[in-house]
Amino acid sequence: MSSLLTAPARAPRWRRPIKQRSRVERRSGPPHTRVSFSHPSELEFARFLDFYRIRWAYEPVAFPLGWEDGRVTEMFTPDFYLPEHDLYVELTTMKQSLVTPKHRKLRRLRELYPEVKIRLLHRRDYEQLLAQAGYAHADLDHLRASQVERILVSPLELETRVRSLARRISRDYAGRSLILVGMLKGVTFFLADLARQLTVPLAIDYLGVSRYARDHPSGARRVAVQRDLDHPIRGRDVLLVEDVVNTGLTLDYVLGVLRDRGPASLEVVTLLDRPSRRIAEVRPRYVGFQVPNDYVVGYGLDYRERYRNLPFICALHPSVYAQDAGGEEGTPEGRRLVALGDR
Ligand code: PRP
Image (cartoon, rainbow, N blue to C red; front, side, top):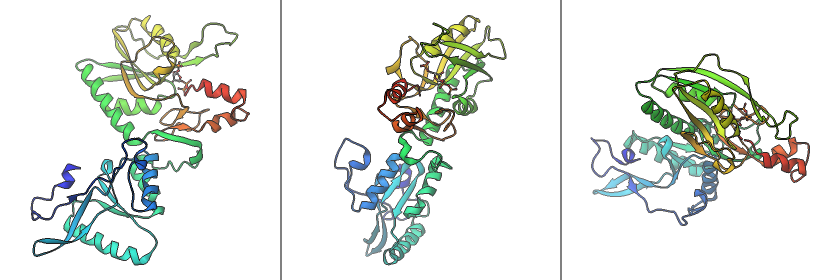
């Protein structure tokens, strides 16, 4: 944001945005509840931004547009600034009487401040904004908005975190080469994105496991290798890539299997971690995000093989899995699924 607040080198000293008084009224609660907005549509937009985890500031600066005798005579204060997209947004209504002067002000602003990105936004443009924020085709039509409890990690947050994990791992393994072992299948997108950001030489292999319910007739062995690695790992540096660690029982079992094969080192990177559900004592070396005990899908994680391709991670509304269990939410079956909450 600081670069935005700086006028271009050749601009006169007085041609620079002026910081506005903060409109934050409360310190807690979701961001859209902390600010006093001038118009209900602004509150609605802020709520929309919060839902999609797009960061924003309300009326942070005003741009002087006209001067007389060295004094500012006209200003323009865009409604929102989205720092992740370096974009100012001015909301608009259908009222032509209001739209025309706004267009004029915007033209003037673009002339005077060509480096500033600003958009006049009507409600129907929200979809475009989502596309810009990395939600692309995620119009949620195969997952109705009402089925999403909340978005936990946005596409941009995923991108940023994966990049920083890759930086750390590349630093830790500098001068060595790695075997990335991906745990099928939830790891698909995380592994693909992480591997492309790593700067050390690497090979990729996959491991598939099956899991039994604790009361399955097969007895105590809850996890079994179903699809084994293609290559030996003896003497190699192995990094196991997981999408989520819950109880840690899967990881504990897999680490045991891999350790027996004599790797030079064996560490774990997991995109998501739920330490609150831990039963086995496993500690992944690299963690993307800690998540609550909701049923989460997207970016590789599924619910009955669906929703893996969502570009963000969201918590499903409990009614989704309660209904799919063939019972109402609150029935023993529904409750059992909720309690399992493996995702
Ligand atoms: C997930 C995940 C882990 C496991 C973690 O797999 O990939 O392997 O659950 O749970 P735990 O810590 O309680 O053992 P899932 O069965 O959902 O398979 P998938 O990756 O193919 O979707």
